[in-house]
Length: 570
Image (cartoon, rainbow, N blue to C red; front, side, top):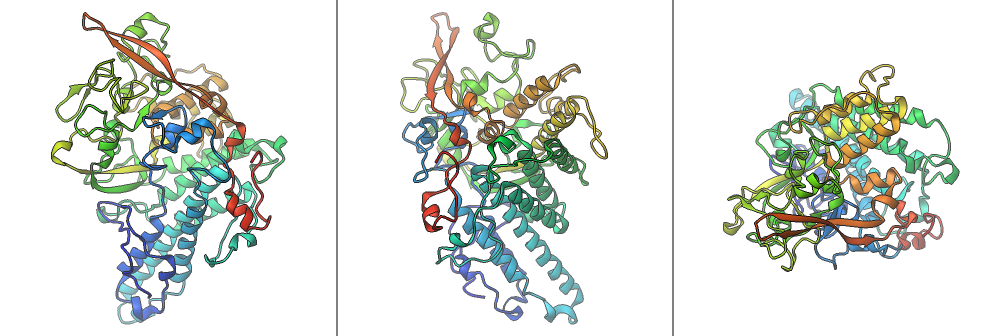
């Protein structure tokens, strides 16, 4: 094997998958069994190179989240490149979220790993130590399955941005203009390819790991990625027959059948044995514990740090720099426990806007008066408050992020802690299932086989669990009303988990959800110590329907000599 130690690998272990220098994929070649027969660890470390291609959920673009490019949040710094989305300044030459080349490099890494492990027989152990032989053969099979899962993951990240893309199922020479050999496949073909890789991976992946291997792909992770892919495939954006473009979605066929397949795939994850289960406290979801959360299906685990806390804690608190700030659009979506929809036009709501609200709001957002920090102090976003305007880097929305911030850390003495980014968790799967069932059978309907739980029941499983404890949605909603309820629940439950930016696209409501006013709140402290709250417009954002799909990078169009077709409108 060439230069296993040329560069620092990303280790998958009990603590983290952390970003660092990665071995060049061309160094990841297996010469023969003798070079590696006594070190399965080296093979695992090479697989870590493939894992390194996974997106960093805490920093989509620079230090910003895609949440700040939809109606979920606003970035405190106007010069951050994430703002290009909000001003419509995206082109085939300049896209801050252009993942094309990174994704194909990661896909190439995975293919190198799969092809290389195909050459390993472990025959030196077959007769001398059959137990060790069986162990090594089993682990190699598992590692290949992990690489197949990662391949599917990378392709899913591509198709949700670009539509159909080239499927490169061989090791390409990175020093050539390989793109001219691989035209874009139809969206349908890409979905089938992702699903096939998920199925192949699930067949050979374990259901669970010991603590030393948390963060690796499991059977449930592969099944959940398939389930998410099929939900997207059934969604509005990819089902516009009048569009007539097979690169961008389905141009015919039975859409209800697609919803049913999505429901079945998500139900399979819910009923998997050993079962996933909801965590009792919402606020601890991102905290790394000694045992793996029963709710988290696939995650990225980070070594101890306090960088995220510093970047997103409210200015005015020690070491706080602000960063991504929740929007009023998001905050207003959380229910009032007595009245249902929150409404600024109701005097009782406007006078005390954060009282009697969905408990998740206080765990996700730091609003005026909320206690915050290791030694709790009230957040002061009112004019002249320690966290308010006109202070430099004060939130423009009047809200600060709380989700993911470890408030037990004393940043003044440099305390750190590990954390995790949840790529997939159980609540998403229930909401996926609810959405698919409602589209296929309506709020109360059930289907054949395993589809014995209605959309409303699945939705209530998320709402009424111990960590949330909201009232159940009663029977009586029609399909459109249930759709709205599911979409709102998805918005508030999965806030800042990387979903909203894509959900409003696949639902084709981005013109309403992104275009137009991003809202916040203006807070004034009255002389008697009370507060007055006024909703305000923070930013008027631009939306163009061509943004439903990203432009293919112009450099790839040029290199392909016309083989790669640009998306419409670009």
